[in-house]
Amino acid sequence: MNKFYQPDLAALLLRVGLGVMALAHGLLKVLVFTPEGTVGFFASMGLPAILAYLTIFIEVVGGIALIIGACSRWVSASMVPILLGATFLAHWQAGWLFSNQGGGWEFPMFWTLALVVQFFLGNGRYAAPLPGNK
Image (cartoon, rainbow, N blue to C red; front, side, top):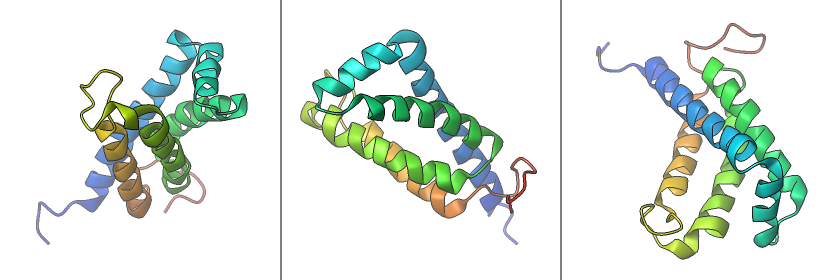
């Protein structure tokens, strides 16, 4: 076997990276923007409050789950609609570059694609020894 072919290590690195990013964004919504501020931002885009709370929950709990390697396929699949919403509702009008004012859509779209890759990779071998983890 080629020593550079390490799909389990790739799954671990991607999973932990995605988990840290999701957790950081969820905590940002809780600790900096506040849940009420996040609800207000969602409302400004015509989205109901429940979606703001659901987004915070999925980012915080899902981020932790990805970091430890629990249910990464389910978590990745649940985060894809969030990132597609961020791409098309919050960032699309700012253009492609994320460095544009308002943040463009390149980063959330790349994050979406990385979540799709994680979905297909699964937890990998280096995950928490939980029931159902293969």
